[in-house]
Length: 257
Image: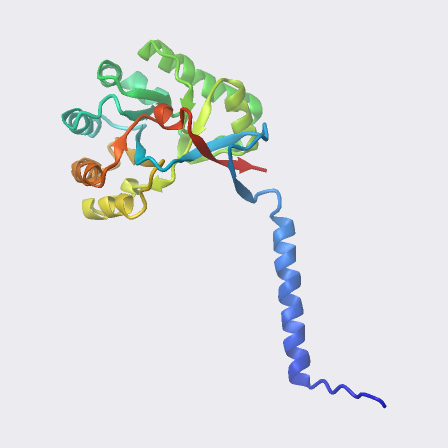
């Protein structure tokens, strides 16, 4: 008995569309294989990694600030943090050119006990630099911050949050741990104080690293900050420095292939 299969033009067209979609999807995955990132937990891989958060059930979070421009905003923000008794529980990443221009603010940050990290030298995209230029930028910032603070920073948040495998590798060789964030307040967009509060509270979780700024370009951070602190405390969160957060914890990193 012979079986005859009838294929209509419509079904043939559908089959071709599906087949083409599969080919395109496979091609995209293949072409992007060198830029795809994966989350690694306590990875045994010795490859370069950046820390975004830690896996913990304890309601501990790290509130972090970047400073790279201006002198009007840091003071009010430092006032709030001191008033809220968080001056020794917050990590501040300092741009070295900014630090050179404002040694008196750096002195206050040191004296009040904040954890200090590097925010690099030039505020640029380091992934476009040569290996030598990357070392020069990180090294220059390290020397300047060490001289000004009398401390040797070992945490770095790269300008623009930009890095690739080479940047991470070189930073690690120079004794630095690269720190990113899992919750972005987006205060740099100046979306309004209420929105900044919402951006943090809607995403915050145990082991979180929160990104905020104390640069003059962020005009609403000092308004949102007291509300954020009070609400997080009301929810049972404890503020710790980045170093305290990652010490003895399962670090959530992002591995760069």
